[in-house]
Image 1 (cartoon, one colour):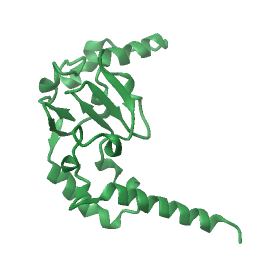
Image 2 (cartoon, one colour; image 1 turned 120 degrees about the vertical axis):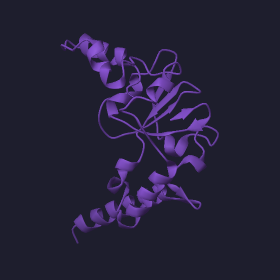
Image 3 (cartoon, helix red, strand yellow; image 1 turned 45 degrees about the horizontal axis):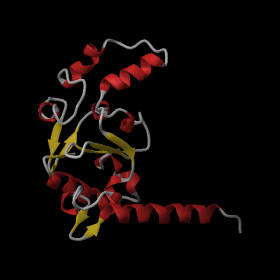
Image 4 (cartoon, one colour; image 1 turned 90 degrees about the vertical axis):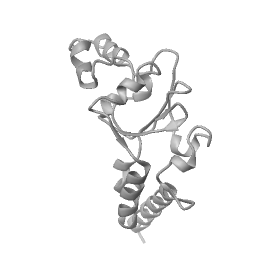
Length: 176
């Protein structure tokens, strides 16, 4: 997450990455589902219905949101990296969203669950994009990416390992 020019690493429930719970709830209601009143659901994030530039400071202090340090995440990755065959072995460490409160942009990149980028506040841009590799340095600096260690991009190396593993499996499955 980027706020006031600073990258913050947060651990929270995936539902808390739905920035606009009213939009999310309204979509369920429009599809014919019975959904509890909004006030019931938002209790888990201290009553915040929409997380935006006006509520982010409050959101970052709710008990369900835990701040993590870059060093903690880097160390966790470095401990698991030697034995990881691909990103899938350490994917739980990596972010599934990049929320840029400075520029009102939400980027999601994940393999399952609700389309988080659909439920952004009005006036925001939501997109499904590989932000870890495509966002410019001035938005998401390499120095703030825990997977960049001494100039090595461990995420790139994990993806390369995964492709090699997949290729070897495909070759093993081919008839002689």
